[in-house]
Structure formats: C-alpha cells, structure tokens
Amino acid sequence: MDQANTLRTLYENQDGLAPNVSNMRTRVFSFTSGKGGVGKTSIVSNLAIELTRSGNRVMIFDADLGLANIDVMLGLNCRYNLTHLLNGEMRLNDILAKGPEGILILPASSGVEEMVNLTDEQKNVLLSEMEAVGSQIDYLLIDTSAGINGNVMYFNTSAHETMIVVTPEPTSITDAYALIKVMSQNYQHKRFQILINQAQNETSALDVYKNLLTVSDRYLSVSLNYLGHIPHDPQLKRCVMRQKAAVAAAPESPFSKAIRALSERVQGLMIQPHATGNAVFFWRTMFESQTA
Ligand SMILES: Nc1ncnc2c1ncn2[C@@H]1O[C@H](COP(=O)(O)OP(=O)(O)OP(=O)(O)O)[C@@H](O)[C@H]1O
Ligand SMILES: [Mg+2]
Image 1 (cartoon, protein in one colour):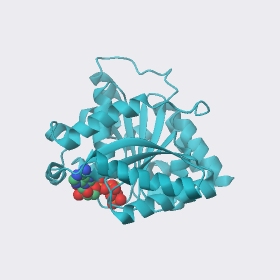
Image 2 (tube, helix red, strand yellow):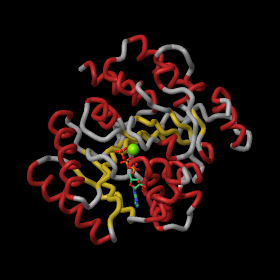
Image 3 (cartoon, rainbow, N blue to C red):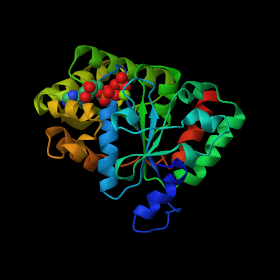
Image 4 (cartoon, helix red, strand yellow):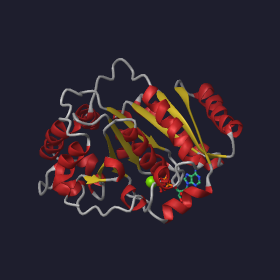
C-alpha cells in the first residue's frame, strides 16, 4: 500500500473521526530482555493489535535489527525505514508502515544503529516529525534488540515503563538480571515490569519472578512488578511461519488469550506522576540523556 497515505487511511478507518490532537499523553512502553529470542517481537506485535481492538491508536517502533523483525513477523513489506527519515529523504508519514488492524510500524533498519550518534539536525527532524504524528498515538511500543547496548539503554530509560521479558531458561533469567543491574546502577532506572514468557504454568512463572525478586532485593535497590505470564504455545510458531499475528489467526489459542489479558493489564497500569510525556517527550528525554 502507498505508505504516504498511511495516516490518512488510519483515520478514515476510524469512522471518519478527526485525529485527537489534544492527546499529549502517549504511553511509551519498551519491551526488552537482555537475552535474545525470548519472545519480545511476538508479544509486541500481538499486543499492539489487542490494544487497537480496545480502541487505542498504537505505533510500534521496531528498534530490533535481528532477523525476526515486526514486518517479517506480520508479512509486511516495508519499503522505507528510519534511515530515510534521518537522511531527510522522507517524512515520517512516508516511512510508517500500516500493519494489521491499523497499527503503525516505524521500521528500524540501520537507522537504529545511528541513534546514539545523531546530529542535532537529525534529532530536530525526528522531534518535529514526531510532534505532528506522535500526538495522535495512544501507545508507542518499542521492540528493542537483545543485548545491553547504548541504544537499548536509552530506549528503556526514556520509556514510561520498561517491560522485561523473561523465560524460565536460566540464561534468560541471568541476562534479565544483568540488564536490570546495569539500568539501575548506571542509569538510575529503578522500576521494571516483569513479563514471563513460555512458562509451563502460572506457578513456574511465579517461581521465575520470585527468583529475580530475591536476587534483586539482596543486591539492588529496584522495584519489580509482576506483569503476568504468557504460556508456551506451539500454535504461535505456526502463525509465525504463515506471517500472521496469532491474535488474528488463532484468537482462541492460549497465547492469544494471554495477550488479551496482558492488554487489559497494560491499559490499567498507572503511569508514574512525573511521567507527563508523550512520544516527543520520549525522544527528547532520550537525546538529553545521551548528551548528559
Ligand atoms: N509463548 C510462546 N510459545 C511458543 N513459542 C514462542 C512463544 N514466544 C515466543 N516463541 C517463539 O520463540 C521464537 C523467538 O520469538 P521472538 O522472535 O518473538 O523473540 P525476540 O525476543 O523478539 O527475539 P530477538 O531477541 O531475536 O529479537 C519464535 O520462533 C517464536 O515463535
Ligand atoms: Mg525480536
């Protein structure tokens, strides 16, 4: 589809409603993990659709350069990406891709690698473009790459909430702990939402959470909130192979049901009082913390 019409079509799809330009409270959530392959992209892409079904306008920032990107997972063909915006070749509306059920995707590509070293001009381009588009978005979900690099840290610390995705695998738990430790000690980030993926049941998910909590309580001064768990579900792989979102192709699967419950919880999260931001605030905070 013509990406230049993405936003116009989005609003036409919503019963001809005018964009809500007064919405300056976009909630920005990053999904991160330390260890790769734990389910961030699967969760973000399906959660975005569920949030949309509840009447929200959702944008995913695909900040992951890994192989299983959002666009691939959803069978989209993104022609342009962040690099085109940062080079001044394209406007934000032109590079945004439209995903299932009206979600918007800001594709990453190599633009993300440059984030740490953007020129002032590039930062201004991004901020002013976000000013126009970001104010019409209710949720900005950031799918970070695996690892603990500068960009991941900036995205996480600038978001309203950091969702740490953890599986019961010991390496996932230790990597999640390492991420929490670095964010807390080097970036003074103290509040985390823990989301357990691929657990066999709630009891084993809670065991993973308690593990993290015990070690964190002993060595770090952080607050870990249990955001819930998503079961291991073989149906998800079949959806990924068909490049379909599970909540659309297998809505009654255990994975999809858990995503619906997650969507409810996410919408009920109380944003911290000082977090008065929106999508522009997110980028500005990130740039400022880079120069601090
Ligand atoms: N709850 C689940 N049940 C079954 N399979 C799952 C579940 N969650 C994720 N997977 C599978 O695990 C694999 C990795 O998932 P995904 O690509 O979402 O992880 P990721 O954290 O985004 O990875 P990366 O760090 O490489 O970006 C995929 O094949 C996906 O289908
Ligand atoms: Mg991923």
